Image 1 (cartoon, rainbow, N blue to C red):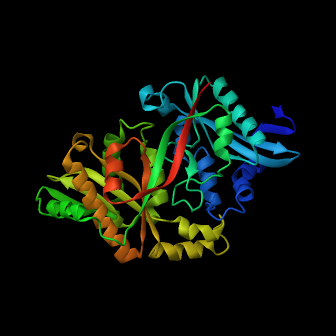
Image 2 (image 1 turned 60 degrees about the vertical axis):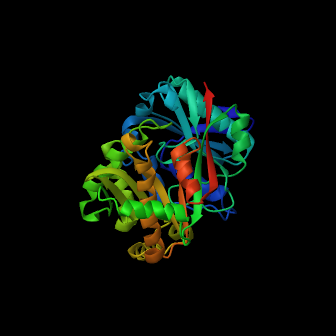
Image 3 (image 1 turned 135 degrees about the vertical axis):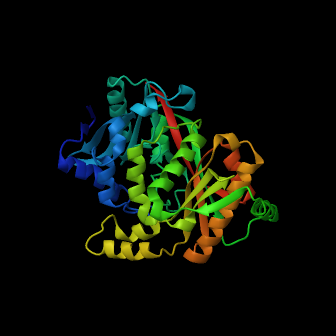
Length: 385
């Protein structure tokens, strides 16, 4: 396929894959907010047999070239588990995705998006949700607010130029995902403190740290709560056991017991909150490479991270409690305990919660109550094929 002097071709072989992985270093070399991810991690994400997402998905990666120079990339893919979900939750039959999108100009962007759409049509897809790279659980959405500061661990970053290019290709916003930031050195408002203190007097409630020596058991408890809590959410796709193991292995070095809490009610786990020190603070100076000395710096950092920011990527309360006052009480207790430890043990000053769906009233109310503010917004777009 060609548009003027642009050629779009499927990634074929190691040289193409290397070009696909390394393109962002060209696009963002002048962008101080960009955080280069470890190249080994990116190869792992893209490679069937390494990333278990590929066990239930089909994909095609494309490169754009102009005069022999690589000027863009995109992944077209669809998740067979997403195809089984109810259409009113966003995914469902006929829903494909594209992501991992980078382009040097609008003409390249249009050609790449058209190539991804053609591939998805040929696979029988009838609508596209994007950008999603690769799974909804990885980096969903296009950054449309907050380009001026670096993303935290496991969050995406992209050029502000991409929004008009994508919208020019006929895409409409379907969902906004927000992250909230707050100063965690300050005590929460008195009302929140009273709710926490009241919970501490309730013998039915126990907020405990995870036990890293029982990592697999704790991961299974969190996954069970997550699947129950998030099952009706827009965009939800179940996580497989192999994906839990894969993610667990990746996250284990940045799992610290006091930063992940499980709330028990009458002895039963009913809620959890996962907090991660912002690994991006340590990754940024490494420029994507562990060698020759990056791995030593990273290992040293991981022994006892001192970070500015803590990110809360996941929270969940079982469905049976979600509309109750108990749900917000448990949430405030977990947030407060993790806040204290983040400041005292890791020197953190800033928290980031998200992403949170723009219409998730419960989580948005909690974010407002602790006086946090939206600092980044990511948009997922939709287009019929």
